[in-house]
Length: 137
Ligand code: MN
Image 1: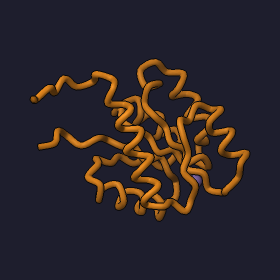
Image 2 (image 1 turned 90 degrees about the vertical axis):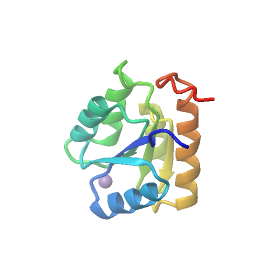
Image 3 (image 1 turned 45 degrees about the vertical axis):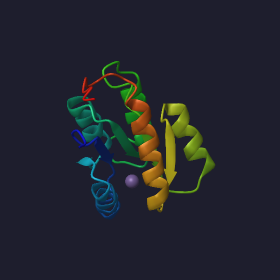
Image 4 (image 1 turned 180 degrees about the vertical axis):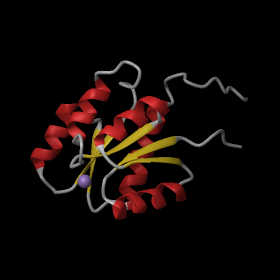
């Protein structure tokens, strides 16, 4: 029925959060890749070209804002939607995330319904780009 599942890259240094996100998204049948810091996040985004990136902001090696700016400045991956994961309900963090190029944000603790809705919204948007030609009518 469906074609290959959308691929989501989770960039998050906290293992508990990573596991939680992975469990939630796997339940929705997405393919998941994980990165544990900003450097690995940028590398895997460029290597794998996921359909969507969930980006923690507070990350070792390279923070989420910097990683996002780098990805959005790279033509190969600039089109990939990035949803920031904001640890604190801090307005400043969110504004900085959007300014860095994040398309949206989710507040921690992550709410399953909100996560599902935002992921779906951005994956639907990215379908507009004719990456795959699967016109099976
Ligand atoms: Mn973190």
